[in-house]
Image 1 (cartoon, rainbow, N blue to C red):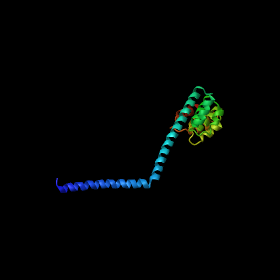
Image 2 (image 1 turned 30 degrees about the vertical axis):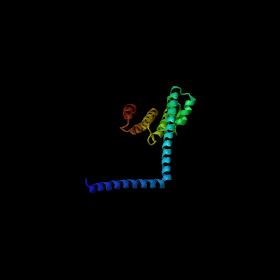
Image 3 (image 1 turned 90 degrees about the vertical axis):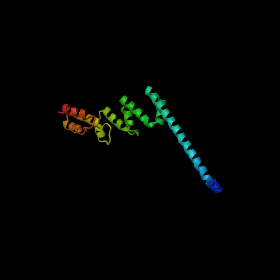
Image 4 (image 1 turned 120 degrees about the vertical axis):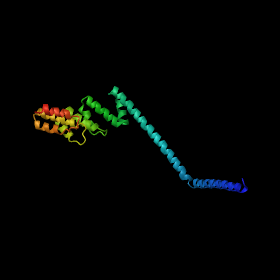
Amino acid sequence: MSLKENMDALKEELSSEEKFFESAVRTERFVKRYQKPLIAAVAASLLAVSGAIGYQAYSNAKIESSNAAFNVLLTNPSDATAEQTLKNDNPALYDVWKLSRGIAQNDVTILEGLKNSQAFGVADIASYEAAAIKNDTASLEQYTKKQGALYKDLALLEVAVASIEKGDIAAAHQKIAQISEESPMYQVASALSHYGVK
């Protein structure tokens, strides 16, 4: 290698070292200038992560507690401690458990107490079951008019049967006609229309 090539290589090496030191100085100045906000951002991030972990642990503990209470209630429905634990830790699951108890025992009082439940489907099913247990045709009729009623077609069939028993065949036909062909109750409605309503 010639002397000129050595000098060019040395200049290039010095230039790259100079750029490295220049960027290190800039980084140091930036860190010194924004030291407090950077520390605050790191601390806030650590707090947020630890808070999320703590909340997740709390949620998991509540889920485990409510599951344990639910399992106790399945074997011993009269356990007041387990019932209170389930009610406090998981109100939606508690409402579902109360609904199953009300249906199993044909207890209209329990079912009517669930008509304002926030758990999905519980209030709707409780309304239908309470009306069906009481054989309350007016309540079943009102239930069929609710938007999105889960058991609408079944309630229509029950109202149609009640109309047949009263001898009001026209009303029975009207109720049966409201059941769509896509409904699982359509076959039963067709059979009732052909054989039950003359």
